[in-house]
Image (cartoon, rainbow, N blue to C red; front, side, top):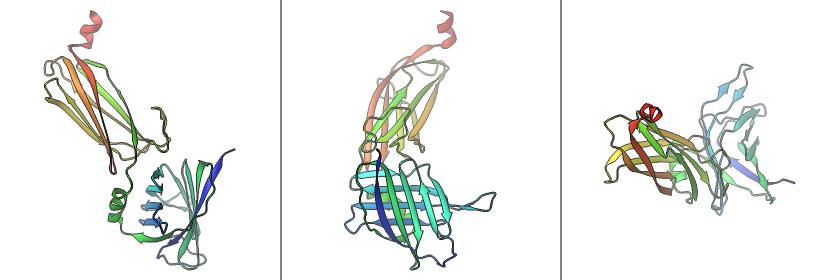
Amino acid sequence: MERIVAISIGLLILVPHSVFGVADIENKNLLAESWDGDIVLFLDFGENIISKFNRIIPTLQSGMLVIGDQIIEIENARTKIMGNSFVVHSENILIYAKGLENNKFLINSYLIGSNQLDAIQLATTPIEPDVSSEIKSNLIPIEMIVLVQQDIRTFWNENYDIEVKVFDKSINPKPQFFQSLGAINQAEIDVKLSDIEGIELAHLTGKTNSKGFWEGNYFVRQNLVSGGKYSVEVDVRYLESENLQKFETLIIADTANAKNSG
């Protein structure tokens, strides 16, 4: 039977309060941490959305819960405002923030799939938006697992395609390419395609999406790219962590039509 971890968090947030007030979290960056710094909760809210039924829907732009050296990204979350309280619900975490009379929120967080039950009181203050990147950069480096799928060979006038999936090993130690559990959002991808002499043919960059996925391609133009073996260097960076891998691919100096006709 699945168990959960419950974490109670007291938030010191300077928002106008009344019994019938509405939780003011629009464009707010909220940070909560334990007195010993072992637990950190970070929530970055954007502009609210008004539904067709005139309901206020908060927009969670990013969020993470850090417990010791474990970092849990809060992704693809559903959000709801209920009076002066709000709810954030993702695949692996549920956050219920109840508004209190002293301009605080009392947060209960539930981690799905854990085998422990703890209650921890956290104090928090609102932070400026430009501080969020600094908070993330000071977090303990995580161990990434990077999966790469690429074309083993590419003919002239075809695309060389490469796909990358990035995971947090502490959450998903044995990930498969199709999975999203433990996927890392906004990991920086840097791919270099070079010939055997080290001369760079293509340089592809980007960031993973909310499913930890990134894809890139390079069009191998006829008569402009020499055939032969090429090295593929995949460098992935996230917070203070880096994962560098090298592969090989083959470019064939012939068109796909020529190949088929032969």
